[in-house]
Image (cartoon, rainbow, N blue to C red):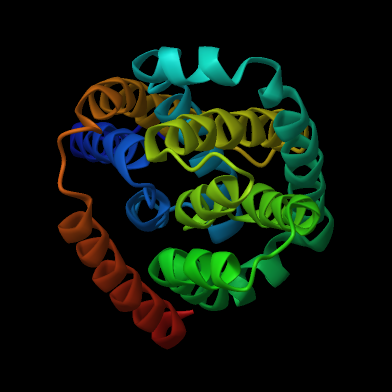
Length: 250
């Protein structure tokens, strides 16, 4: 096992802090963490699995800031966790089954899809509401989004937030609390599968995880204060740059 340099440790921890805060506030942390892990020398599939492990705390550590919202939802959280957990497990199994070569070829397309989901989620939500999409149709969508989340997951936060609002959780902070709970659950299940599949670079994962814990807790506390529009625009622009870069280099 290679020993990480001090600069790599600092970079991974710093990226984890930023990722944790971003996931708690607006989502999109993978836009930063995935390329950092690839830059550290990991193959794309290992970087993806390691990213899941590293970001587990970023959503979970934000939950104390939303304790009132989660308490109000109560047992309504159970069917959400069941449907999304099943989708996340399927997505993680698909990643291991399809293998590293297929995943590496898909990286530019996945990053482009993630950027589009992140950018157009508010518009999609408006269109679904406009055309009175039946709530029964939301559950299959939640399942499909969760499959994507277990497989890759970048940009999942915004589109999951839109789906949860359509489920009837129209108050933003309640939907955001549920988003963090659901994505945290999907990530936990995926981590177990990736761990058994020996697809995780644990030193990088644990360092970034420590940073994500710090960032997630702080981001949850600041989520009511941060101007999300400017942050979203910056994340979309960065996603476009990454997508272009991966199409050229991979």
